[in-house]
Length: 189
Image (cartoon, rainbow, N blue to C red; front, side, top):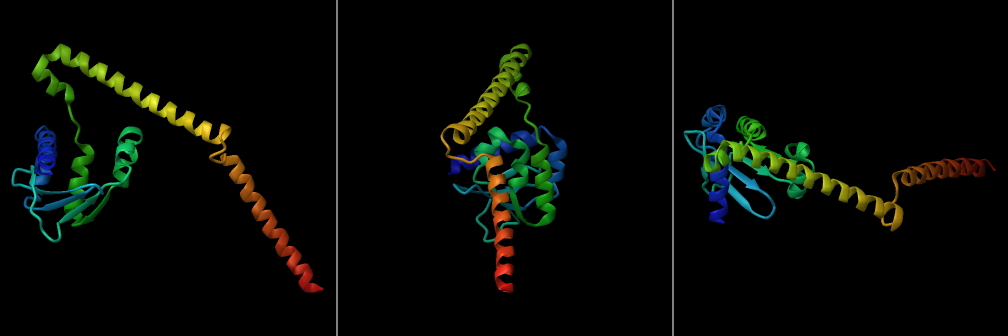
């Protein structure tokens, strides 16, 4: 667990060190204790005077608690836009707002990090290749999900088509109205 916390701290600090605005914004909350709960593990972090993260203390009530959704991995792959909206923040509103802003706007410049190892031109080419590969994987996964959905609805009957569900709902409403009218007729007799 300590290795995981160390890895998370190093990765976050690497991103923050590349953005002076992020360090300044987080330094205003130095000493704040954070708890990140993914469901599988809990990581406690603290913000130091330089606006960087360090392993946190086990306090009873952290200043900010962050609860990650159970489908974090799927959202990372398929729907990154809704990832931040599904994260639940609790605790100090100031710290949570600053933290959310920083994490939402941090961008990793992998090409710059790779350029330090292999040079600018190979890093650029690897970066382009990586982007194409990521796009192809995302496209293949989306097509696979679409194919499975079509199979589940059309061929296997595991799921009902949306038009069938709508028609069923309309039929239930119509039947309810007919029964209500019949009850009123019977009551008049």
